[in-house]
Image 1 (cartoon, one colour):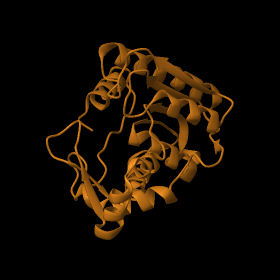
Image 2: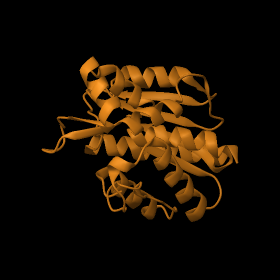
Image 3: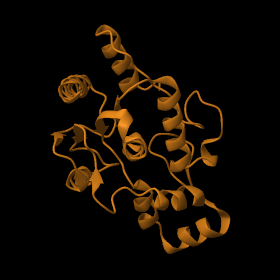
Image 4: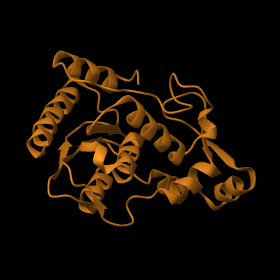
Amino acid sequence: MTGTKAVWLEAWARERGRAFLRFDYRGHGSSSGDFLDGCIGDWADDAAEAVGRLTRGPQILIGSSMGGWIALLLSQRMPERVAGLIGIAAAPDFTDGMWDEMTPAERELLLRDGRIERPSDYSPEPYVITRRLIEDGRARRVMDAPLPLPCPVRLLQGTADTDVPPAVALRLLDNIDCPDARLTLVKGADHRFSGERELKLIGKTLHGVTEAAAGRA
């Protein structure tokens, strides 16, 4: 919740007198717990509890990367609380890709030991993938069937994103069952989507979704 996009969005909301909620899932950022003990279902539960306890009425959900998957899960779990959804480099069902990229030896090690380690592009420490994360991810898939989303949906995606390729955003757009869903591709933007140009686009997009949601109320 201390990332560039979250902090920028809070400032955007404050300037306009709008309520705003940002939080870290368990095992992430400022929250307690061990990241390796968690999985998609746990983090979706955290998001549902935060929205349920700390907000009132329909909300506009904004999720980046894995947060996009969590936002989609929330929209299915509590549709009455969702007025709009913005996915930034959304990564639904990304654990399937992790499994598909593993070698037979890595899969065997994961099933035997419950975890494997891989080099990380973002940290000198290796990135650990747990068996629980993979298995729980399979149970939380949102791309196997049409996604009913009766609210404005906006997907923002960089063409230079090597973590979540544009093809994922196109597939997600095709999978969304919604009369008001749009995808914006930004040439040269990477997975972080945190440059000044991208932040301004997020603000413009949020303004548009706010207006569209107000028109539906």
